[in-house]
Image (tube, rainbow, N blue to C red; front, side, top):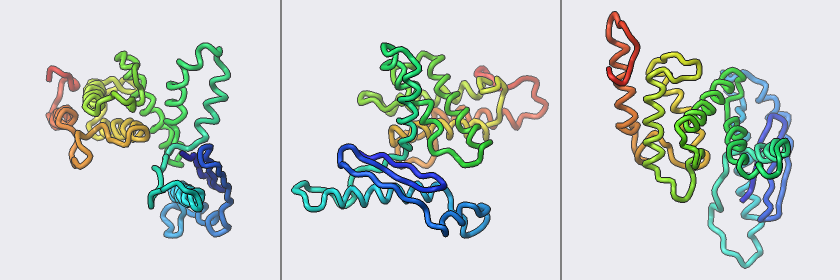
Amino acid sequence: MSYGDASFLGGGAYSDELLFWFRTVWSPDIVAGIKLKASNPNYVHINSLEFLVAFLQEVATVVRFEGTSHAHPQIPKRIFPIPNISHFTLDEKLRLFPAESRTLLRPALLSILQSKAGATDDPRKSGTLRSRRLHFLKFCYDMKLRDDYLMNGPDFLHERRVATFALYTVALATGRTIKGQYIKSATIKQYLHAAASFICLFTGRDPRYNNPSDTKMSPDIHATIAEVERHENVPNKLEPYTVGI
């Protein structure tokens, strides 16, 4: 296992298991591309830099295996999309709490820190994404679904992930949003996408879909969204959407 991250200045990674680390500073051409507007064809996005670090991790892994007796695949190990900076920050945050509470607090603190991983470089959009991910975690807390916030335990069924997101959809449709306001179906989908992209970091499965090959969200989720869309088209509505409707 190796951990890596990229910034607008450079990138790097390390592995305790494979005993390697590297750090690189981006070339002037890359730095110049970072400063361009997104509409420019030569613009360099942060996601491209993170992919480059992931690729270098792959190369470093292969090099470490060369010359040893260990067999290794053509494409070694999986790429971890979560920046390692969360783990360093986590240790700092944990030290703020009593030693006896750190084991219990670690999963929740890591969830909060990693909710910021992979977000857009637009401050406003990044804040919205982070808020919606934390809102989903609060929903799980309020519903006492506290046994596995990341939904990635060895006994955690994907069917439960989908069911949890179906319940979350109903909550959003009935006004249990960040500001306590009723929102449109398109915004509900954005809430679901924010939460699902976070859970995918840990599970590799999108909790909105029953199967990886599906092109439509689970019927349990889609049914609620379809009802909200139908209600949006009702003229002269006297009341917002409710489960009874």
